[in-house]
Image (cartoon, rainbow, N blue to C red; front, top):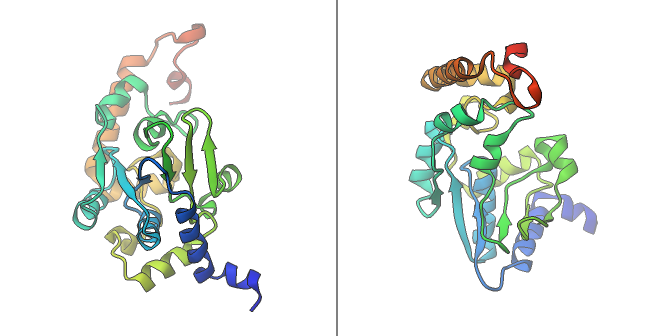
Length: 239
């Protein structure tokens, strides 16, 4: 087996990920670990443990994550810090409007890290998740606005490699994967597609009711109104 073939194996990718984490250890503070409770977060948390580098893990509470995922984090990862938003999603959305694939204000407010300037983040981003991530992310990324570095140690891992690592390491994972859910995230997210949302709403009807109430509230508040630029609210045209 050649050097290139060894590096392309899971063992080689594990070794590279650990080396990356050891290479960029911050000098004045621990890593800022971004933990969502999903399979990728579980993997990077174990890799950090193997690298034996200092880290503080943070879970950004969205208030619309699956209850099973929330319980899993509480039970299996008690060391993770919960960063709670000032308002729950449904209260905030009455002001901001319902999110769409283009107007994803909720990702910025609820998912993206509000980390100290100069932090070095550890993310479970993977190129296999979407063409956009493959095009926009590198193993080491620098954000010029926040002056933070972000490490993506499993950027080049496939789904199969993630699950192989979880099985071989005997890592606990959220039970929703055994129900056939491929990715865990906000219930009702427009990025999940219509089929994905319908499955989520069938699984969690209480959240479906909350989304329906939100749409009614926003509709009653904005229908017929004139927005910036003198245009009618876009919901009157499309919904």
